[in-house]
Amino acid sequence: MRISAENTISISIAFVQTAISKVPLEQREIDRMLYSCRIPRHLLQEPHARVTLTQYSKLITTLMNASNDELLGHADEPLAMGSLSLLTHWLVSAKTMAQVLNRLERFYQILGKGLGIKAHFEEELVHIEIGEGHHQELDTFFAEFSFFCIHRVLCWLRKEIIPIEHLAFPYQAPSHAKDYRLMFYGAPVSFNCNSTRISFSRSILEKPVQQNLTNLEQFLTDPNTALFTLNFSAQNWASKVGDKIRNNLNALPTLPELAKNMKIKPYTLQRRLADEGVTYLALKNQIKRDAAIELLVNTDLPIEQISTRLGFSETSPFTRTFKEWTGIPPSAYRKYQ
Image 1 (cartoon, rainbow, N blue to C red):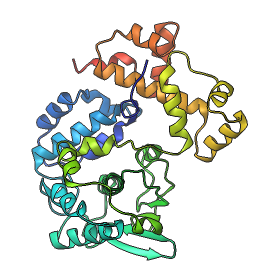
Image 2: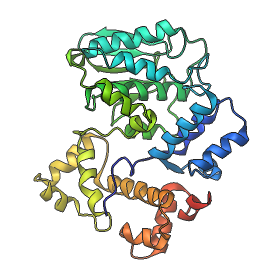
Image 3: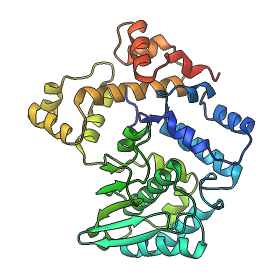
Image 4: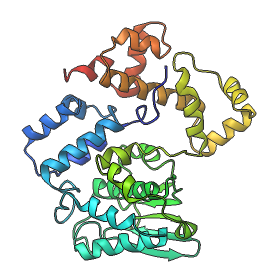
């Protein structure tokens, strides 16, 4: 069974909770949007529940369109729909990434509201800070979503995953902080910092922009989904292992078997995964969990058949394991029906 990488990534329900926490819409309307994105409202009360990236991106787009605010009430003033389109039209015509960062900063200065971006240089690093001129304390959604969009837009312009050297947030680590690794491709993160910034190697400034207006037109048909499922070839070992084992979810190889297939010694593979903060067992469980959520949400397959596809001999151990993963049984993901 082959499931694409973007479909087999899930994130904490807390991302949904923070997104809707300040959106200027009535609760009844928000509930309707959750339902349209196949997110049962009762999942919001389950701290370990998860949603797929495609569900989350669809919800974000729906909320933005309904509120006409690309920051969903989390900034001092609304950021009108179309702002991202205007920005990317300006950025895609830049020649180098240095011009991109200059235009990114200048765009929000001209706009006079929104992110308040400022670039700083320090030896071999370039830091992008957000929140300059922001009169309220930056909340979780504003910071994490802003950084997410900035990074993904830069990656899209370059047609590659640009490594993040460091992320700094001014608040305490939220309950879903462990999922920042998924959202930011394993980047190191610090909390309770004095600034809100994302840092890259200064070498990216010299690199040329790889996209064009034709590609931008396609990108803007559904920009949130394009950004959330951005999947240029990632070079980290967790991504390489994930790509290998998604082909065989019903009969996953052992680490020695996988290492042999990847032409690397088992100890070396284990160490390289450890350097990225993951283990092979955790990676297998994560991919199985996220594949299960994808199949429960986006197919009508019986739970018994899903458990077989994921390598469980019976439904009961699958149900028990899934509940350990998410705090609720598989059937809870289908209550929206």
